[in-house]
Length: 171
Image (cartoon, rainbow, N blue to C red; front, side, top):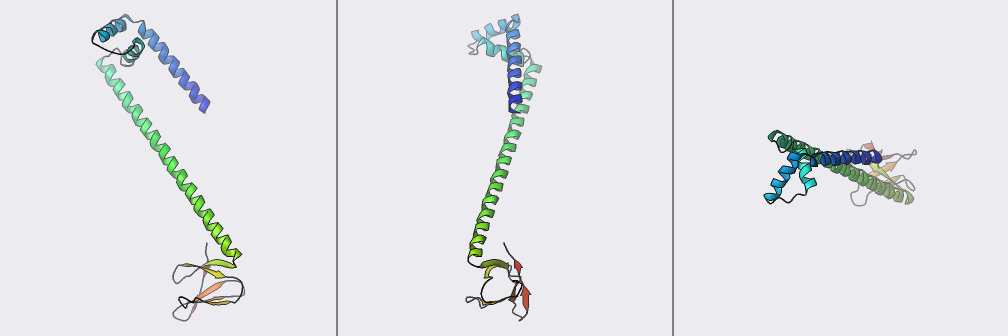
C-alpha cells in the first residue's frame, strides 16, 4: 500500500511538472509573468506557471475553484489527522487496559502464592482476599465480619441478620 501511494505521488508530481512545462510555453503566461516581476513579484517562473495553471490563468472562476479545492484539501487533511489522533487514543487506551490487566493478574498470582483468592462480598460489593488454606472460618479483626468456606471452597459472608450469603469469585 505504501508503494502504491508512492507511485501515485510520483504520477501526480510528473503530471504537475508536465502541466507547468506546457503552461510555461503559453505566451499569455509569459506576458503575465513579466507583469508579475515588474510589480515586484518574487515567484520563479515555474512557481508562477503552476499558479497560473492552477487558477485557470488567474480567472475569477479559476481562483474560486482553486480556493474551494484548497479548503476541501485542508478539511480532508484535518479529518485524516483527527482520525489518526483518534486511532492513537484508542491504541493508548488498549495498551493501558493491557497494562492494568497484567498488573491485576500479577497481583492475583501473588495472592494465590500466599494462599489467598479474591471473593466479592454480596452485601458491600467489595472484593476481599480470603485464604483457601487453613481454617474454614475467618473473622476480620478490623470489622468483626464473619466468613466461612464450605468443603467445595466456596465462601459465605454473614449478614447483620445472621444469615449466610454466598460470595462470588472476584478478579
